[in-house]
Length: 518
Ligand code: FAD
Ligand code: DLZ
Ligand code: SF4
Image (cartoon, rainbow, N blue to C red; front, top):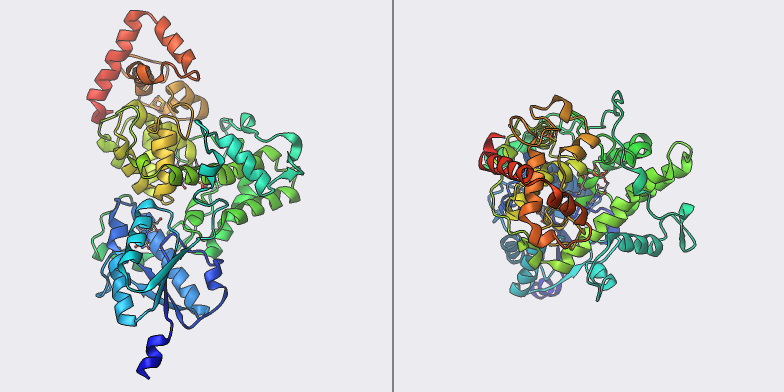
């Protein structure tokens, strides 16, 4: 009897909170010798100060996933946050399960985060049983693929990677040519919302997450932002994720490209899909997302112009995969890059939204309320301000990693430190994304009702973006002066009258010294 127990193989498989992929080949057969484990642990709730909706969203989705596996007859161990035997790290809990349940083999899916990847490799070294890692079967690309694609190249270009992805995966292609003959329709995708245009109300869910929330409160997890626990708006299972995707394809796709860069007060998502959370925790796959949108375009080609579809597909098979590839190609060095040597602290109002700057107030308020802001708010409002103000990229990263429901380091840091803060010196993008008030006014309806005056550059009520913009170019001339994509700005700056330059720099200095009062 004892002998039989020893030779019986028992496998333990770890599922991380962002690996809720029910289509993974692990689940294609039910095997009594296999046990799955999911765990709510303090190492994950505390590595960043997360938005409460992010923690609740992940835990609720993990619980729903575990219940689904159980109803499909898989064996599941679910360790709740406040369980007595919870040891609160992946390693300690796994070690404990191995010794209490006598598992003979351990498996995990490759994690998306460098930190967890190291932890799990170390764990496998430390345990006495055999182990192996398998792919998460979610992305179009492997971790290495981007590195191989750009091997030997000094500059990475998203566009060439995107075209290769379209070809390799035969997405919107006619033979080896792009469908319609053109690869990229970005030029048609930069419209402001017409003044009286009322965007469609976003589809939201009314999930009751009060039990999950109560456990997080009992555990005293430090979080940011607010939550309506009886009407949690985010999808927490695959069914809701598919509903959200369907809503996007039917109601938003036809406007997506045109208004992708538009912003307007009190409209928190416009025609964006809000599908990033569902995708990043793998409740749905990027392949499913693009297939659904292509299918909708094929059904309604007259209503949905091709540029709307192409703009959306590019975000998913282009930008999303590109960011993942850069992450695995450049970590761990990437996490400490600081090209401009920025050292400032984030102003306090980043955590409250209490600022007189209308655009910043709106973007921060909605981030605290919904754990979401759309791309152009992240890039050209909050990110733009942080870069102009010379905030240390660690501070900026901590804010973005905490506040958004879709924030996981592989896609957060490449967007924040890379695309938004140019702290990587030009790996992700070729020039810094900064602007004065004129761009913000061109793309939004924020400036008209702002305390500050968009057209005023210095003095009372001058828009901070204006003087900070020139101050940014002035202080970073050594690093940027030779960048051919920015040469024009330096020509304008150099031709400016000395007294105008001085006034702009003095104004910027005043605003930077009084940044908490803006
Ligand atoms: P949509 O506008 O509807 O776009 C569709 C999908 O395309 C998104 O769901 C996303 O999966 C993908 N996508 C679009 N742009 C990007 C991009 N630049 N990089 C990667 N994928 C992209 N995205 C995250 O998923 N997590 C983050 O933590 C994150 N942090 C960001 C921080 C900054 C400073 C910036 C500028 C961007 C960040 N992004 C991040 C990228 C992008 O802003 C979000 O993916 C998008 O806003 C999510 O909302 P959505 O699903 O409505 O996107
Ligand atoms: C973000 C997060 C949080 C807040 N909590 C958990 C958790 O308790 N258990 C878990 O398995 N995953 C959690 N996650 C997601 C992980 O941080 C994520 O899986 C890793 O960062 C790998 O990408
Ligand atoms: Fe933002 Fe300046 Fe416009 Fe105010 S005036 S909304 S601060 S850009």
